Length: 178
Image (cartoon, rainbow, N blue to C red; front, side):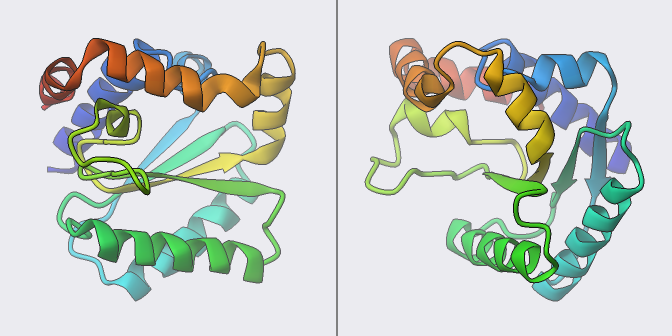
C-alpha cells in the first residue's frame, strides 16, 4: 500500500503541482529526486507529531533532501481535525527552535481556503489526494524565490489559473492521479 500511496502522490505532484505551475521549485526537486515521502497509516495526532519532529531532525542531517511529504492515507480525513494537527505541528516547529529553518505547507483532499466556497476551483491549488504535511527548507525557498519574478503574486496567479480552468477540470486532473 505504501508504494501505491507514494506513486499516486508523485502523480499528483507531476500532474497538478508541477504541470499547473503551482509551486516554482517542485519540478527541480522532483528532477533532483530530493523529495522524501513518508507514509503514516493509522496514526494518532500524537504519533503524527512525533514523526514530524523526527523528520525535522532527519532533514538536519540529510542536506540532499529538499523537502519531505508526510502522507496520511488513512487519517485526518476531516479537514478541521487536520487543521488542528497542522496548527500543533507549526507550534512544535517553533518549540523545537526550527522556526526560520523549516516551514510547513498543508495539503488536504477537502482543502478550503478561509472564506472561500467549497466548490471554488481555487481550493484545488491545495487539494491533494491525501492529507499531508509538507516540510520545506526555508533557505531553499528563499534561494528559489529570489530568482522568481513576483513571488508574492504566486498565490493569486495559482488561484486565477485554477478558476480559469474551472472546477470540473481541476477535479478531473486530481482524479487521474489515483
